[in-house]
Image (cartoon, rainbow, N blue to C red):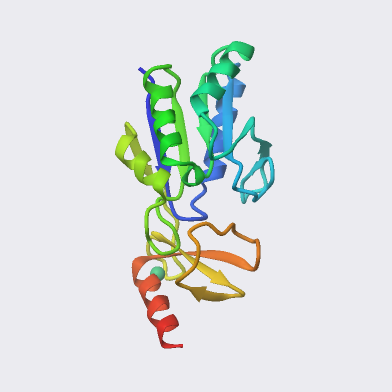
Length: 198
Ligand SMILES: [Zn+2]
């Protein structure tokens, strides 16, 4: 029985690298992985880009009103059944699409491996990620370290190099002077308190 996997971690925890490596393992064995990426994630365009320099074109960009299960069914008719579905930056999907991924695993018997952030820059869950945490058969945290050496949990947003603690949930990294830093809870709250004082 296929399962839905959610592998989450703060930014720079190597999610895209692991995705590309895992997809390659399938290809190398003559199997066919399908790689999905949310359309809203304009970083890298049509490509899944790992910080180590490896990149690969996504098979399909998913828009917010797309029915992923229907897209997969169409793909199955055209190319045969996929051996595994990979989703990069799955936090940018909708909760409904997270549910569709669950049914692809359960009813269509195709393993689905999602990679993404658990929470946004204000520590709130991304809706799709929260749904994946509820539904996934298997959860795995991918770790990265904070500047202080502790495990980073949160993704603090910087605009023009300054930490900000208000704004829209979605702002793509490296666009409009936005960047992110993965922080442990202690460093996160320290920056939040500093920002409140200035
Ligand atoms: Zn820290």
